[in-house]
Length: 182
Image (cartoon, rainbow, N blue to C red; front, side):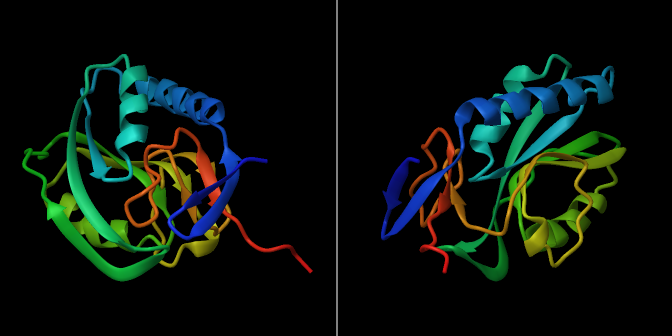
């Protein structure tokens, strides 16, 4: 089992890049089928979703557009409880089929605060696609329409996800190492 250190914490290998790409390809196949002839707009949430969005978009064979917005609620390994919008949506989504791309949904707070803003712009449809979902951490119930992986409530890094700014460039996912169980 591979171990890496990011800042002051150790992480163990969790999901290899090959499995991540396999799941993303399957998700793209589903989206290609569901959105054939609809020209959807994908809204990728920065910073964490950039690798997920890039690999997913390469597998889409439908006419589609993508834009990026920045939302943040994490500092270190914990959510701050406050959602910050750093870069806003500058594309008209009225009567568009919209798919939000998110790297991870854990508590659901970020999406819970962001979704009303999107719904107020009256898209034709609104769906959420995530790379990772932590069902055990969910406090705000969010309808996730497409999900690559449901994972335990442990902190992960890599494949776009960071720990205080580092680790996004790691090609696979690593999970925070916990001490030996007793």
